[in-house]
Image (tube, rainbow, N blue to C red; front, side, top):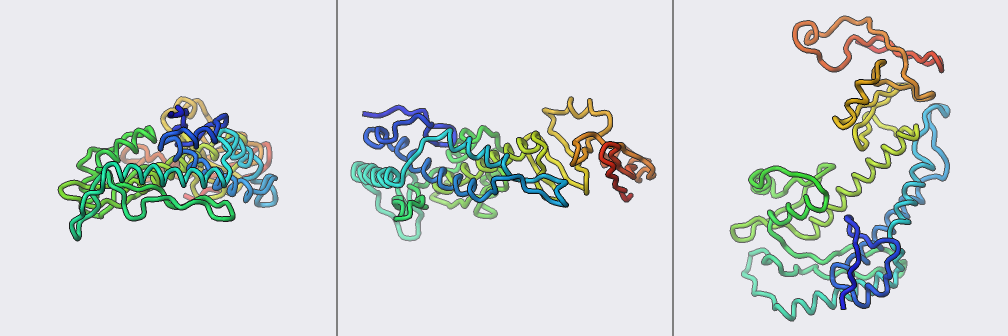
Length: 320
């Protein structure tokens, strides 16, 4: 009997899932979700525990950075997925081995010609997952098969809800570099030729999907921190819907097109004071750049000469 579990978009089991029942009666997709959930919880819990349970500050306590806000968001992520013990993850790995072995016995592997890549839909040499070790750490291997590049692209864009380029663009990348570019942040996965088609390892595809989701979750956490007046260090920080960069006691924030109306309503610009979070006063005493004076606006606010916050008393001179 198959247990129909509503696996999340990230391939995780929801919090109210009966893991033992899934292990007993679930299909390969659901059993794999048990193993994936265990690995996800291990990684998330390790990241959660590495963050101090207090706001971290810099520059004499004037710029709040990572801290309790990020721990709270990670804790919420853990509450949304089912708890999986190391023993249950071991059972999941064992069941996957049984399911994959049964599939192989039913279909029978085709003979491989020397020097040719494994045929599509067939298990590679490192196909079977490794059960967790004594310490309860997540296994690192995943069931792997080779799938056509076109199918891999469809799976990636469906799982990440993104759009891509024309198929010829990816095929040209594979022919030129032996890799194709998938998602953010700059995820590149190996591609190999099998007959007349380019193929992608399913494990590499799963890793790209996971990396994309992890990056989106990171951007969402940075955006949530920003909404709570928590700044992250860095020359330029990206977040969901935009980003910002910091200059001393001030930061400049920008948003994507979805928040363009919000930007246009901010009459004093997009600079903010890091302490009071109010819009500072801007002075424009520098001459226009060559592009602004002779062509169209450069978009870099080239005449900005000074930023000052009347509330906190902070100020900063801007070089031309």
